[in-house]
Length: 414
Image (cartoon, rainbow, N blue to C red):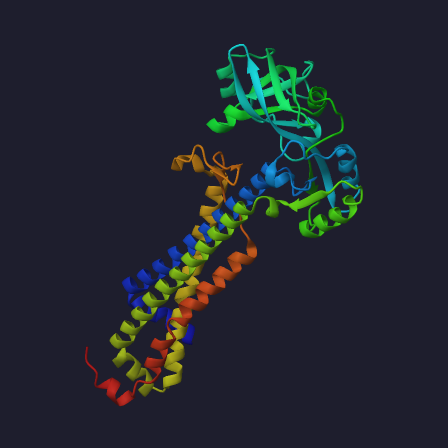
């Protein structure tokens, strides 16, 4: 009986009910959409951080990550990578050489951040050829000592595919070494700073230039799905720290703490927004229902006189709020789901906000397209929180209605 009576009472004041439903509906829908976009953006940032760092777990010479010194290397890096692959939970171990260098031609010279990789193994982490705009892949070229250059660097050096460049770098012993490379192709990421300093070559070509095979500066480890990164990092510390070479094992969170801090801060702002939204909606509903109780004093007095006692009248007010909340949450969920599907399908390029060259903690996020993903637990918690807040905001009005004295209520005139 009470739910039916509550439903009729709500639509007796259609405008007031629609305003309340709209407030709850759009606040709830906006909260869910913001959570979906936030979770997807954070996941993309985490993936970008792992790619930028070189893996879920990083293995390198002790002190290398803080200094990036060229002489802090793993002398038998390929063997380290092979042993890492034998640790339970490791999906792949990726050897890399990363060092500052100078690339020069007859028309000039440019400083580069050189990455030497095994292209086929590197694909487990990132496809370095996804930005290839001209030329050949490193794993498909027949050129000896191939190198891929950022497009802006290539324009400054006035070189072309197949052209010769001289690479100057500091060897493992600290002595300068020079080697001839052939340009296999050009890369364009869309970020000026990257396209002016980016250079990739193969491990074999780098070893030929530096005069020492098997030496790498870093081994990046990818974990299998469901494996705890911290536990795996500890297992790698125990398994790889027995060869006399002091190694450092870092998780990507330890390697890129700025990214972790940014994501945690962004999450905190979302929770603050949710809290503010709950407070605003709660006060709006509480105020509206208090006004409604004042307007319906005679009605409540009549119901009391007809046998509906004070406690039941209070419950009626709460049932009205619950019915209103269910309608609002149902409509809001439909709107949020439609928004999620639309954003997930079309995406929102971050560049439309003027962030064409955005970098965070050394990780490029300017080409990120924000989409949406549903985290079931978060959506359930948000839904329960909205319903509890909305119904709870009407408790004071329900208590006030329950305490009306029938005789006084019947003599009340608006």
